[in-house]
Figure (cartoon, helix red, strand yellow):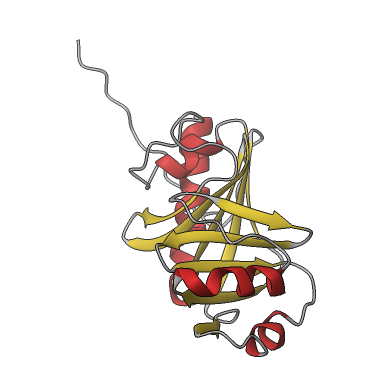
Length: 184
């Protein structure tokens, strides 16, 4: 027998609210973000200045204090520092060939936390988010619905979604709606 599921209609002013007890979707605090590009021979000097060893394998991250480096490609990282820092100035002093671009105002972070957070993100992300395939600390460039994001698993039941500011309203509303769907 076919089961018919009908979507629940929300008032337009309720669409931005998330009343889901098991999963919260919130905006991340402001952070310094740097898009870092460098060849392998520059990694040791950059790691020293950053105070962490830049990850060199796909889907990996490295953290020290408030600073995290997310591996995005063979010569590309997204550095996120949640404390006030001199990250950009520090990288400008490094005497090895690299590109460090402050993208703090381009990106917005969204935090998804709670039991079922993986299902909420999977509402629009085709990536396998099981703990075996995407363990705590994993990060990758992927998609959410119609947009590109950087996804970082910060805990067993928590994710940080980084997206461009121009897509942030879409991503935030998408994740809140997905959280409502997961709770139903």
